[in-house]
Length: 310
Image (cartoon, rainbow, N blue to C red; front, side, top):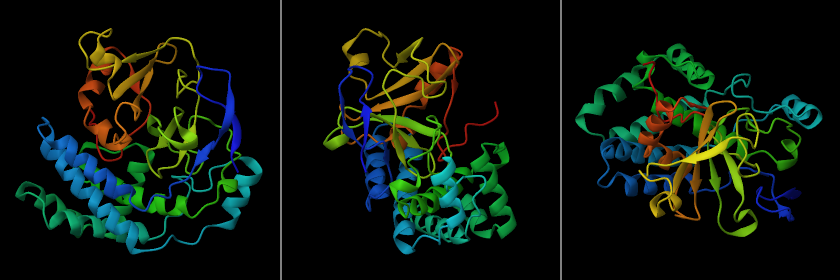
């Protein structure tokens, strides 16, 4: 049931729009693969973005291959009664299905991957159950180590498929009472980015997009997605001149907060309706470096990339 909310921080006009949007797009990863391919053309990170396009196609195949695992009724009841995420990323008892998703992704990528990637894929296929689960635990906890780096995009991708499938099996009523505005109401994960949507009831509204399960939830614009202040929030882009047309029309900007010294990217679909929060985030890693140099720490992960410890 749509919830009446204040729209975007730019007006006081209230309108009907969903507060929480669960993943339901059967072509979710297929569309992401197309965006990765588009971004890869002529990009300095073209090889990596092209690899991620293959990963996304593997994700689509895995998503379609199996149904969601049964949902724990106790977790659903706790969510309804106490506002707790019903699929807590670190507390949820993962079904072995996620490892099947990983095998599907690796098999799809291995069929067309460059020779340099093949050894990593072979090592992934050779992982025993305990090792795979340990890496998954670290990915979800945000504690991956440099030795995990080559595995992270693939394990992260498999976990995305698993949790997205589980989230899609929920009803909005199961997650509508989560009171913590800065984490996903379904799995408790931080957002990968926020998106300014176009079209339909979500038009011109800002939604945070979960880095793990693809659930989206509304938050007023020009408001820190980490500490929720509206003071000291400003925007940075890769444009040399912040007042230029290039900066004004940038598809991706970093929303930085002077209060808590964190940032999260904003993906403007009003500038490009095909922009994707995961793909466009990876394609603008140069922006992360720029913002990091100014002393801001990123507040949400992209599970398709291991940032390293350096």
